[in-house]
Figure 1 (cartoon, rainbow, N blue to C red):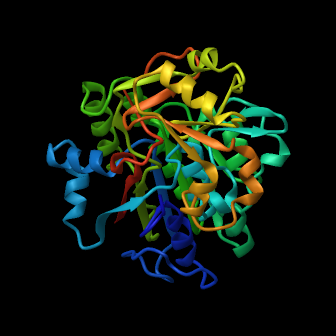
Figure 2 (cartoon, rainbow, N blue to C red):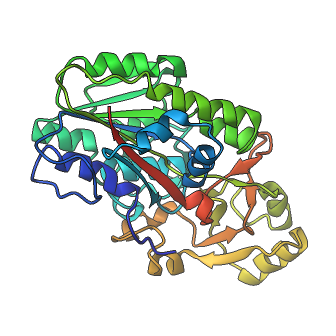
Length: 367
């Protein structure tokens, strides 16, 4: 699936363009260069554009709705990247580049003769991002950059990968402390970009689903945070809200270990590219027989080379990173995902190419 239109990778270069003419804006923003002191980019994991508009229609976000009435705010939809997974999308946000350029093209990848899960595994140097991070770009320009993350993920492998050489990392313990830590950082009156990350909505969506009572509670909590963010006196501060992906309901899960029982030559642990698993296959006829015996569901076998030709991973030469994948993706029907671990089943998830997974919000307002 080719990437078109405005996307998540356009956000940080646009923020940098407000402070330096070395960058050109990629998004049409109400903020103008030379008039901005601080930009807060708040990524809310899992908050798809359709969820945000649904919450507004239900009256769950009155503070956000009030801000949309101002001429200094607006809301539009952007496209995330393929595969629509958190680590891939965050790498694109924080480098301003497509997966084909930065090289993080999945959550679980073949690397150094093993499968590396970027949420759980130690990250080898060979998996380092191939593009500069916004923290590094900002420092080169003399612009302050600060990341504010949940304390529990501070020392996680993905944080180490996405925030290498980030000099200013702050943490909050619970969501209630997010505004406290942000306001303290803003009050230092440094000119630059402040990146926030929160994951509550994503966690609820996976386990309970969109429109669940807990989803409503998380949406309302996000809306209340808007009144708790405070611009320092004398500073022009803008808030941008976005997400990494949306969610769709899960109709069922496919057990990868059971497929391996049908075809033992498959790798015991596959790479995972979105909702698909990525494998090398020597005997295609044997794979098709195994899939037919394994399930009545239509499981597509897609050559990775075909995805590259279709710019699935975005623009750029993805060939240096293709060793991180198998030769073929086993793609389940929409709404189904592969189950590769013993974790509990998911209610909603992402990683395919359904519009509900691919479309994310970009909201801006002046604090």
